[in-house]
Image (cartoon, rainbow, N blue to C red):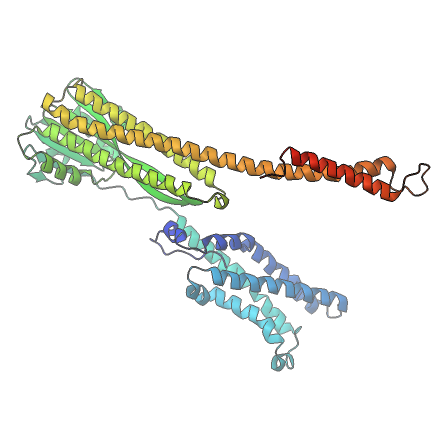
Length: 490
């Protein structure tokens, strides 16, 4: 009957993780797959039609066809009741139209043995045989419907492009202008007063206009607004350009669920007393950063410093959440009992290690960005020595996160190494057992080959009991050697 379809919009990964029958159901689906059941249904066609097309078919062939029919029916019984028992929603599974047809068809053989039915209708009656062919329609129909359902679930619809939003904040952080047009944004940017402009969801078609407004070449903007880039600071003639990444995590149901770290590029342009933040995707950065700036800088501080500090605080907070999720996932992998390790454990671990490596690299570059800011090697208007202590706190938090991520990376490497060593040890034990059995089995073959298959009537005075005793003694000696070298020990 196959795997039940999940309602559109639900999280299949979460549902599978909460379903204790998932592992057993997957095993049954692999053995009694749709393809195998379709094959059995097709096999029913000659079994049903041959007795009808050849009326004088020999009894021995009819009996063989009846046995084959019963075996296939038994497999269909097993498939139906196993998948009903393991279904996530048994009621929905039972009431499905194709499954009801399945139930009707597999119940027919039971009805045939009932006295009031068998007395009136023969088991080999053409009508009952033709009804059996409906099993092919039932299996094929539910298979095609399930494939269409899975295709509709797994077909990834292109995500709608985020709507571009431009928000402008004045130097006092109190006045916010939302959904400002690009023309008005350019006038605010050229104004020498303290202004923060936040642009999110900027499409490719607007990059030329942004390049003309900021004086940054389009190719530079494109290179910095991609996920593969890394946090850094570039200084141009009249402005500083800072690139940061905001991290987030999600669990994807690929085999066992896997932690995936996604990153959102954020470009910060500092020009005079103005600051601009640009991101391609729709983000929640503006509201959080604005609230942080109001709470931590009540007034009298340069807008550029307040926004830059709040932006870095937001980024670090996001990375704290990422590091916490990595530690949680690492703990989950570490707590898996050694005898219950899933088959894709190494694949999952290597994927997580790849994500952690990128996380360690991003935190390292973020730490370097903070070091450059604190050293004032890049001119930022309004940034004074008194602000270094504030940014030094962020730098310490980044150092701690980087060390924590590095420790997680080392722990993950140790976990992978332990798993490989454990697997190798178990494989060595199996190979030792095979080697012992092989050596013990070779001794009788070797002695038998030297003496010949039959020692009766041989010219030398050797008796069967003597050969058997010599063989057992040789096998005991070899077994004793294996015992002394420790091959029988765990």
